[in-house]
Length: 402
Image (cartoon, rainbow, N blue to C red; front, side):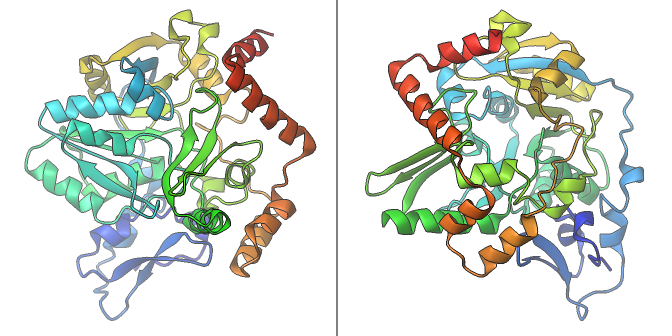
């Protein structure tokens, strides 16, 4: 029977919940808003399937077996409209289109009507848009693993995207490899708390006396290289702030609100069990001017022959192989390399969650744990001015060259 004694040893992948034959396991939110398995002892039949497949408890069994050396690529979707809506270069949408052309199904993370994030699937190209853009919160897997298995048994191709721990969770649940399954993970900084996101949304709606009708964690308001959290409200108001001035983004990037296991992630490696890893690639024009564009590019690490074949068959991408070390450096962008290193836990994290659970106002929590400095305020104001003048990207380019 699965039992969580140390929360840093549970990624919330939901493999145990999905595999349980007696439905004795529920994924329940804790006081921080993260889901953990809770076993109903009356229903449990002591089969130990949950323990035997846990990706963290059985990590050594799940190490990469295919003799394929990871290759690096840069790509972007030929459709500029798709690139604008995506977090990077619109690559997952292009891969998804190819799978659907093959008669397959595409899984990914999307918003529900309350802007909570959950996994779902689509079977039509026009529905792929729901997976576009980053979701800086842990998604609810629900019954997605079971649905994947059913489609695979029907002989249909399945493309599944998720965090590295979710990919390992799906593999653990399936307990065998499928030729018609394509796995795509991301270079992950960690998964922020759904509870923090929920309370932040409620705070903004209360402040503006209106419901949110549109949300994006990485709107390209100020270009592809600027992370901007955007809310559009039903009353016509809009909120659009970057990492230098938004509480949620600052808290995430400063190690305050991610899941405990993210600070000791067990899946931070270059060689992975996924077929493809997607990530950001900054300043690519330094090594390849062909990829200089204002709407974004994607770094791809290909880990299998199957992944390489899918990439080669995807005709809606401008793509080129690059040196692996160069791409790893550009993905890190002079900071901590998230493909191999875990995020660093902030010493104030526990205090932040204590205040959050005491219903301390978000504005007070921000001032205590993620204050916006005068310099950051000036930087954001100048960014808005330069964007309106149409010179922001040019100034960024000059700065990068310097």
